[in-house]
Length: 132
Image (cartoon, rainbow, N blue to C red; front, side, top):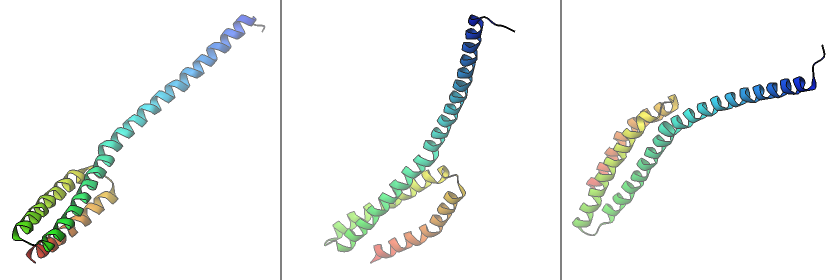
Protein backbone atom coordinates (compact mmCIF):
# COMPACT_ATOMS: atom_id res chain seq x y z
CA UNK A 1 0.00 0.00 0.00
CA UNK A 2 1.51 3.28 -1.13
CA UNK A 3 0.96 6.41 0.91
CA UNK A 4 1.66 9.88 -0.24
CA UNK A 5 4.58 11.75 1.23
CA UNK A 6 2.26 14.24 2.95
CA UNK A 7 0.35 11.40 4.62
CA UNK A 8 3.60 9.81 5.85
CA UNK A 9 4.86 13.12 7.22
CA UNK A 10 1.55 13.89 8.90
CA UNK A 11 1.29 10.45 10.51
CA UNK A 12 4.90 10.72 11.75
CA UNK A 13 4.28 14.18 13.16
CA UNK A 14 1.09 13.01 14.93
CA UNK A 15 2.97 10.00 16.35
CA UNK A 16 5.75 12.22 17.72
CA UNK A 17 3.20 14.64 19.19
CA UNK A 18 1.32 11.78 20.88
CA UNK A 19 4.57 10.41 22.30
CA UNK A 20 5.54 13.88 23.53
CA UNK A 21 2.12 14.34 25.17
CA UNK A 22 2.49 10.98 26.92
CA UNK A 23 5.97 11.84 28.21
CA UNK A 24 4.72 15.25 29.37
CA UNK A 25 1.76 13.71 31.22
CA UNK A 26 4.06 11.27 33.02
CA UNK A 27 6.42 14.13 33.91
CA UNK A 28 3.60 16.31 35.26
CA UNK A 29 2.26 13.43 37.37
CA UNK A 30 5.73 12.75 38.78
CA UNK A 31 6.22 16.44 39.57
CA UNK A 32 2.93 16.43 41.52
CA UNK A 33 4.15 13.41 43.48
CA UNK A 34 7.46 15.14 44.21
CA UNK A 35 5.59 18.26 45.34
CA UNK A 36 3.51 16.24 47.80
CA UNK A 37 6.64 14.51 49.04
CA UNK A 38 8.51 17.78 49.63
CA UNK A 39 5.48 19.27 51.40
CA UNK A 40 5.36 16.26 53.71
CA UNK A 41 9.10 16.44 54.30
CA UNK A 42 8.85 20.11 55.25
CA UNK A 43 5.74 19.69 57.40
CA UNK A 44 7.10 16.79 59.39
CA UNK A 45 10.82 16.23 59.10
CA UNK A 46 12.19 19.75 58.78
CA UNK A 47 9.85 21.36 61.30
CA UNK A 48 10.53 18.53 63.74
CA UNK A 49 14.24 18.97 63.21
CA UNK A 50 13.91 22.71 63.75
CA UNK A 51 12.08 22.23 67.07
CA UNK A 52 14.68 19.67 68.14
CA UNK A 53 17.46 22.11 67.25
CA UNK A 54 15.83 24.83 69.33
CA UNK A 55 15.49 22.43 72.27
CA UNK A 56 19.18 21.58 71.95
CA UNK A 57 20.12 25.26 71.93
CA UNK A 58 18.05 25.78 75.08
CA UNK A 59 19.88 22.86 76.72
CA UNK A 60 23.15 24.65 76.01
CA UNK A 61 21.72 27.81 77.57
CA UNK A 62 20.74 25.80 80.65
CA UNK A 63 24.27 24.52 81.12
CA UNK A 64 25.66 28.02 80.67
CA UNK A 65 23.24 29.51 83.19
CA UNK A 66 23.93 26.73 85.69
CA UNK A 67 27.63 27.53 85.50
CA UNK A 68 26.80 31.21 85.94
CA UNK A 69 24.68 30.38 89.00
CA UNK A 70 27.43 28.28 90.54
CA UNK A 71 30.02 31.01 89.92
CA UNK A 72 27.79 33.92 90.94
CA UNK A 73 29.27 36.28 93.49
CA UNK A 74 25.93 37.49 94.82
CA UNK A 75 22.50 36.03 95.52
CA UNK A 76 21.02 38.46 93.02
CA UNK A 77 23.21 37.10 90.20
CA UNK A 78 22.49 33.55 91.31
CA UNK A 79 18.74 34.19 91.33
CA UNK A 80 18.82 35.76 87.87
CA UNK A 81 20.78 32.81 86.46
CA UNK A 82 18.39 30.30 88.05
CA UNK A 83 15.40 32.15 86.59
CA UNK A 84 16.98 31.80 83.15
CA UNK A 85 17.49 28.09 83.85
CA UNK A 86 13.77 27.73 84.63
CA UNK A 87 12.79 29.65 81.50
CA UNK A 88 15.05 27.51 79.32
CA UNK A 89 13.78 24.28 80.89
CA UNK A 90 10.27 25.39 79.95
CA UNK A 91 11.38 26.21 76.40
CA UNK A 92 13.09 22.83 76.01
CA UNK A 93 9.93 21.06 77.11
CA UNK A 94 7.77 23.18 74.78
CA UNK A 95 10.02 22.49 71.80
CA UNK A 96 10.09 18.78 72.60
CA UNK A 97 6.30 18.70 72.75
CA UNK A 98 6.09 20.52 69.40
CA UNK A 99 8.58 18.16 67.79
CA UNK A 100 7.22 14.88 69.16
CA UNK A 101 4.17 14.48 66.87
CA UNK A 102 6.23 15.44 63.81
CA UNK A 103 8.48 12.37 64.04
CA UNK A 104 6.44 9.59 62.51
CA UNK A 105 9.10 6.94 61.91
CA UNK A 106 9.75 4.11 64.32
CA UNK A 107 13.28 5.34 65.01
CA UNK A 108 11.95 8.84 65.75
CA UNK A 109 9.41 7.46 68.21
CA UNK A 110 12.09 5.33 69.85
CA UNK A 111 14.34 8.38 70.24
CA UNK A 112 11.54 10.34 71.89
CA UNK A 113 10.69 7.51 74.28
CA UNK A 114 14.36 7.38 75.31
CA UNK A 115 14.33 11.15 75.73
CA UNK A 116 11.25 10.91 77.96
CA UNK A 117 13.01 8.34 80.14
CA UNK A 118 16.11 10.50 80.48
CA UNK A 119 14.35 13.86 80.85
CA UNK A 120 13.28 13.32 84.47
CA UNK A 121 16.85 12.32 85.38
CA UNK A 122 18.15 15.46 83.69
CA UNK A 123 15.70 17.69 85.54
CA UNK A 124 16.64 15.98 88.82
CA UNK A 125 20.33 16.66 88.11
CA UNK A 126 19.55 20.30 87.34
CA UNK A 127 17.61 20.57 90.61
CA UNK A 128 20.53 19.03 92.48
CA UNK A 129 22.90 21.58 90.96
CA UNK A 130 20.43 24.33 91.74
CA UNK A 131 20.42 23.32 95.40
CA UNK A 132 24.22 23.49 95.60
